[in-house]
Amino acid sequence: MNILQSLILGIVEGLTEFLPISSTFHLIVSTRLLALPSTEFLKLFEVVIQSGAVAALLFLYAKTLWRDHKLLTLVFYSFLPTAVVGLLLHKVIKTVFFETGWLMLLVFVLVGLIFIILEKYLSHPALSPTKSCKSLTPAHALIIGLSQACSIIPGVSRAGAVIVAMMILGYKRDESAKYTFLLSLPTIFAASALDLYQGRQLLGALSDGWLLLGLGFFTAMVVAYLVMKWLIRYLATHTLEIFGWYRLVLATLLILFRVLP
Image 1 (cartoon, helix red, strand yellow):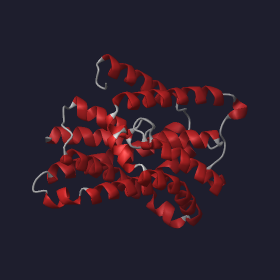
Image 2: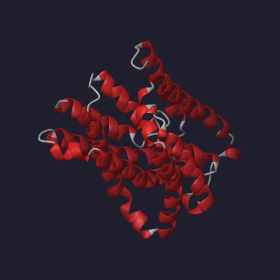
Image 3: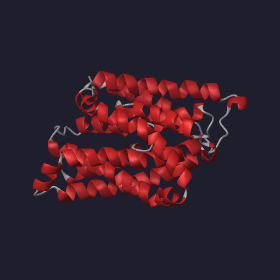
C-alpha cells in the first residue's frame, strides 16, 4: 500500500461509513479496484480508518450522550442485539460473508430496492414519518438494534438498516440519521476494539506503515465528520430514494466490469 491508496481508502471509509450504502461493501470493492492483496496489514488498516470514523462521532455527539442519560440508555438497548449477534457470528462474518461476492452484491441490490419501495409507500402524506428521537421507547430501541444486527452482512449498511427500521416505526429521516450516528459509536467501537485485540501481535510488531495508518485515520475522520453533518441536513428535506438508485447503478457497473464474482 502506498500513500495515495491510503488516502483513497480513508476517503472511501469517511464517505460511506454513515451513508446508507455500506462502507464494508465499498471498501471491499475499492481494495479490489486498487489491486491490494488481502494482507494482515490491510485488515489492520481497515480497522484503523473505521476508528477514524469513531473519532468523528466523538467530536459531534459525545456531549449529547453524556448529558442525555435517557438517550444513552436507549442506545445501550439498541446496541445489545448487535453485540450478541456480532460475538456469536464473528467468525462466520469474516470467513463467509466477506468472501462471497455474489451474496454481497445481491444484498446490496435488495437493500436499494427496499429504499425505493419504502419511499414510494411513505410518499402519501398520511404515512409520512413524524416522530423525533424524544419519542423513542425501549421496545423500539430493541427493534432498531435487531435491525442493525442485519448489517453484519456486507452490503446492508448499519445506517441503512437503522434508518429504514425507524422510518417504518414512524420516525423522521433526519432524526433516524441522528440516532444511527449515536448507535454507531458503541457498535463501531466494540467491533474495532475486538479486531484490534485479535490483531495486537501485528500492531505490536509493526515497524513501518505508521504514516499510512495515520493518514488513513485522519482522512476518514475529517470526511466522516463532514458527511454526517451533510446527511442530517439532506434527510431533513429529501428521501432515501437517491441512495437506492445509487445502489442499483453501482451494482450494474460492478457486474458489467466483473469487479465482484
